[in-house]
Image (cartoon, rainbow, N blue to C red):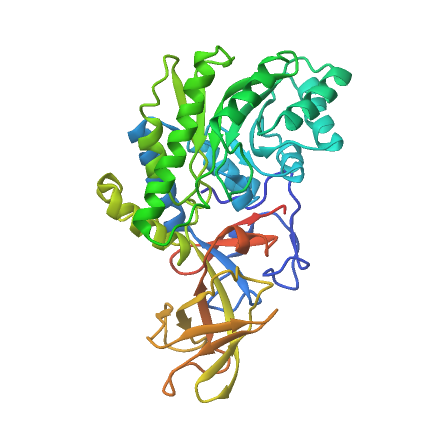
Length: 432
């Protein structure tokens, strides 16, 4: 990661950004400031990305996709950070995946030429915006999902009126009973694919898609079997579309793969049974920063079921830490730490992983002793259960690991990238 903190087209850092010193205005190179978190150069709470772990994860995923001969279109909703999108594209990403019209607008504002919308494009404003981008930029490539005749018709109606120079690329989305979007049966999927093929001037069928990441069963083995069964329906629909001559593109896109089961996606899509060449497109977004809970557990499951994952080395590492001060020890076994739901994801509670006493003989953070556990969060307070003999005192700094990176990134307009000494070497801005 290079040491220029703000893209030329981004807003410089200023004191209105959480985690930025109050005397700052117009900083475009935070690395040149030599801010150090442990020296208390930054106001807390502050969100950090550990550079060494970040680069490790980039290399790990690059090795995974190259080994399996697949492509990665990382889900940009995780970070919504152009600086991090740039890193992923430099690592060979096929496109940036997004989820909403706003996210498309952000990506286009920053000039990204290839977008995969892992969602249906619905509503006049959003469809008109995308079609106008296709009209004004001949290099813009756009892909989205359809899962009903109605979603196809929405695209077709606007295309008739605006006459874009090329059709919108679409993939039929397969879903599953009780799940989110997506066709529930193979026959439904074929009906949608036929509707696409009937309007080649407006929409072009490029492949089939699904999202397996929300499948949950009582046991890990049952979940794995359900994921594999669902992925089989994706390839079955692709074969049915090929048999009817509905696919307009070669290679055929087969896309799935969140951040928990991408190993199973690669296996399921490696032999789809198609005559046409295929391009397997993973959409994992959280690999870049990983986490300390949800995806750490998912990776352990992955290692157990897929020996090739374990063979790739230590695996992904947590990158994000959010640091805050102990602001009160009101009870013997309670510390109040100055961060809350405004600062970290809270679908799973953050983990106190490190602590540091400013002005002490400590050079680096200490590992948090056992027995320290987050009990609950308010908007801006974290209740930490501590042993009676805990070393924590008011003014100490606590580093917490988080779960579900998507829901921590969206709490911050600026996250700082730090080296092993917790010196800021870079900063990234988000656009949620």
